[in-house]
Length: 219
Image (cartoon, rainbow, N blue to C red; front, side, top):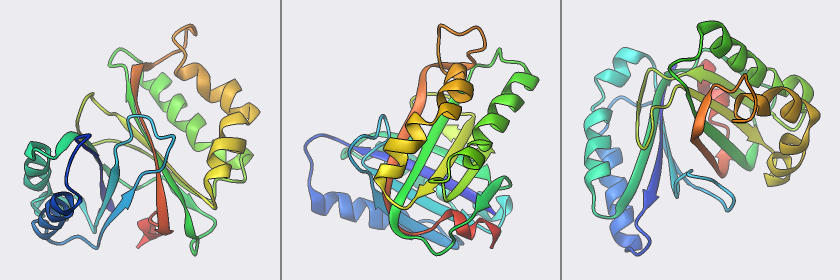
C-alpha cells in the first residue's frame, strides 16, 4: 500500500465553517483513495499540525494519478492554512498486534535525517526505531518507512508511526522506556557524535484514533 500523510496547521484565528469547507473540497478533489480520513491532533503535539489527513492508495501509481499533489498545493495556498507538512511513502515495513483498536491514539513522527549521514547510519537509525515495539508493549501497531516525496517546513526522510490504546501509553512508557533514551535519543541529540537527525527536524503529531489506519497497510 502507498500512503500520503499530511499535517495541517490552521491560522490562529479562523472560521470552523471555512475550515470544514476547505477539507471537504480537498477530499473531493482526490480520486482513487481507498481511505481518506481527517483526525484532530491532541495537546502535546510538537510541530504536528491541528489536523492529520490520512490517504491510502493501492499503489504508488494510484497515488500519482489521484490528483493529491495538486490538492495539497491548493490546501497549502488557503488563507486559513498556516503550514502544511506532508509525506508520501510505501508502507512496506510495519507491524500489527491490535488490528481492532478503537478510540486510541495515532502518533506520527516526521524526521529529517541529514544529507551527510551515511547509508549505514541511516539504516541503523531506522532499524533501532523499528525495534522499539519489541521492548515497549504499549506500541500496539507501528510503521517505519522512508519518504518518497515530502513537503513542508523541512525535507522529511522518514515516517515513524505508532498506535496506542490511549495517550498514557505514548506519554509514559514510550517516552520513558530505557530503550528509547539508550538507543533512540542519541540519533537526535546534538551533543552525541552519532546524531544524524537535523536539529529541529521533526514533527511529532498525536491524534484521535477512531479505528486503526496501520492495520489497513496489508490490504
